[in-house]
Length: 239
Image (tube, rainbow, N blue to C red):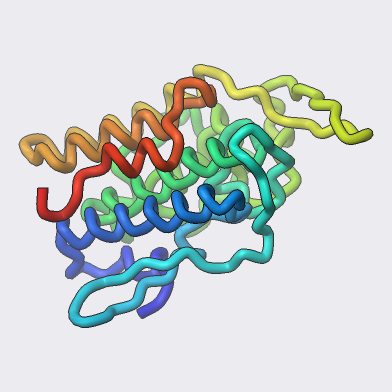
């Protein structure tokens, strides 16, 4: 069928299909992490959607930036920064954040399009005047255009906005710069996901899923679930 980015623009995706696709993405990433690897470049374009026996099947693709990392290791993120964790690193926990943002896009796509580009507009005082208004949608648009968030259009620009001081991690004979996440960034992301929850008032399964997404998009690693924990708490289609 194509990638998830294009698939989300269709108007015939049921809520149950979204639930099923979300679970498949979590399951695929959990299997990757259990094997000791990270994707390194998570985004909707790298999730391919197939149709088999009348059901949608989601598969993670493009492992050109994949790395072998155990749960305690991390390194500098060199993939697409739009869905990267605020810290600017790649690790198993950082990819939990990325999947949380991707699943937010999956569920919010029911409510947005060319007219309503996001479910929570960016106030003028939070809008970054240096960032062009490209054809981004949903939470991706919200993050890229929000001056309090470090997600940008291109790689290698994590300190462009000068939001936070960088932390220097010394190891293996080299220095690596990571962004220091702040609660202000987290508050922006969480406010957006809570706005999505209000769209699903009365849908208990959706509300449960969005509570998981809120936990997945915390800034501090010790406050986030692992991919396996997120998957174990995620409801099945039949529940």
